[in-house]
Structure formats: C-alpha cells, structure tokens
Image (cartoon, rainbow, N blue to C red; front, side):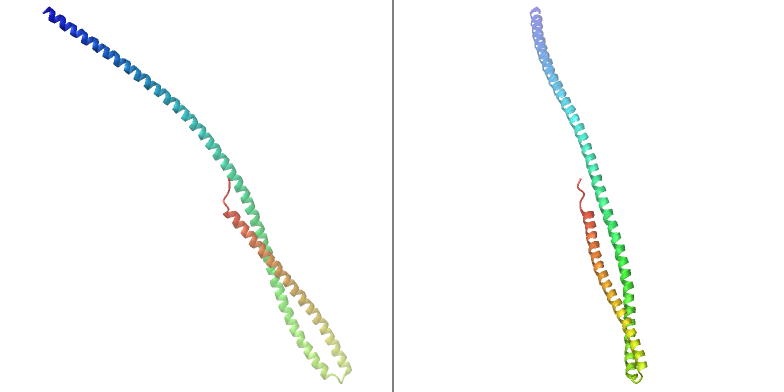
Length: 202
C-alpha cells in the first residue's frame, strides 16, 4: 500500500509540475499577447491623434479657402454689378435721347407737311396771278401791281423753299443721329447681355 501511495504521489507531483509549467507558459504567452495588444493600441492612438490633427488642419485650410472664395466672389459681383448698372444708366439715357429725337422728328414732319400745303397754295396763287397778268396787259398800272404781287409771292415762295430745304436737311440729320443712337443702344444691350451671361471667376 505504501508503494502504491508513493507511486500515486509521484505521479500527482509530476502532473502538478507539468500543469504548473503549462500554466507558467500560458501566462507568459498571455503577457506577450497583452504587450502586443498594448503596443497596437498605442500605435492606433498615435495614428488617431495624427489623423485628428491633420483633419483639424485641413478643416482650418478649407475654412480659409471658403473665406477667400467668398471674398473673391463678392469682389467680382460688386465689379460686375457696378458695370451693369453703369451700362443700364447709359442705355436709359440713350433711350431718352432717341425718344426726344423722335419727338423732334415728328414735329418737323408736321412742319414739312404744313409747308408743303403752303407751297401748293402758293403755286395755285402764282397760277392765278399769271392768268391775271395775261388779262391785264391793257392796264400798265394793273400790270405793275400784279407784277409786284408776283414778286412778293416769289419771295415768299423762295423763303418757303428755303425753309423746306432746311427742314429736309434737319430731318436727314435727325435720321442719321437716330441711326447712330440705335446702333449705340444695340451695342450697349449686347454688352449688358454678355456681362450678365458671363460666369463669375473667383
């Protein structure tokens, strides 16, 4: 019995020793795993901090870029707005000038129409006077009177002819000026459209 007990005790001691060795090896392995995990966590922490710093720096730069873009956009808008407003003012002024020129042209047209009627009437009077002269040859005084009347009519006719010519010249001048104004307005309107359709460059 003693031998058996000693054998059992020896086996138990050997098994306990082997178990302790296994436990010690497992503990050492766990310690190595724990160290590797700790190292990985430290590296991840450093990486996160670096990424966080880079992200913050990028956010600051992006904010600065947005600010610069806003400033450039505002500056370009102010310049374009001022140019457009100036062109609109010029266009409005030209439109007023054209309206005034058209009004003057209409007045001159009425004057020409009236003068044409006067000329027609004077021509009729001249014809009557010529017929009167033909029938008044027997009376010199009457002839002289008629001659004086004809001379006066001719003077008035010359004045009216001169007036008509001046009005025609004025109308031609107005038409030329109106054409220039219309071209100027067309150019200004084209410039306004180009400015409004052009993309703003920051």
